[in-house]
Length: 165
Image (tube, rainbow, N blue to C red; front, side, top):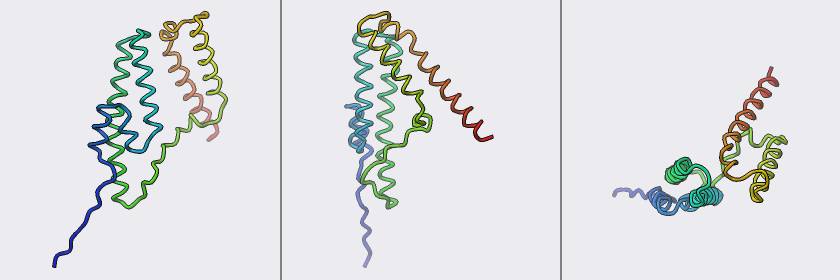
C-alpha cells in the first residue's frame, strides 16, 4: 500500500496578495498581516494624489513617485507572501510578522532628528498661514532635506570610525 503525502496549503497566496495590491494599493500588506505598512502606503498615496490634484509641486515628479510607490507595494506584497510561505515550509512559526528594525542611524537617540522634525513642523506651520513661506517655496527647496539627511549619515559614519580607532 502506498503512503499518501499530504501537503499543507500555504497560509498566504502570493497571487491574491498581488491582486489585492494591484486593485487597492496597500491591501496586499494588510492581507500579509502588516497593518503599519498598509497605513504608510495609504497615507503616502493619499498625500501624493492630493498634491497632484491641487497642483502643488512638480506634477511629473509626483507622478513618478506615485508610480514607484504603486509598483513597490505591488511587488512587496507578492514577495512578503512568498517569504511567509517559505517560513511555514521550514517549520518556523508565522503567527506574528516582525516589523523590520529601523536602521541604526534612525534609532541613534541623538537630538538631531528631534531638531529636524521641529524645523519641518515650524516651516509647515508657517506655510499653512502663508507667513513668510508658501508650499510652492517648500516644494522648490525639498532637496535640502535630502542634503541634510546625507550630511547626517556622513557625520555618523565618521563618528563611528573615529570611535573604532
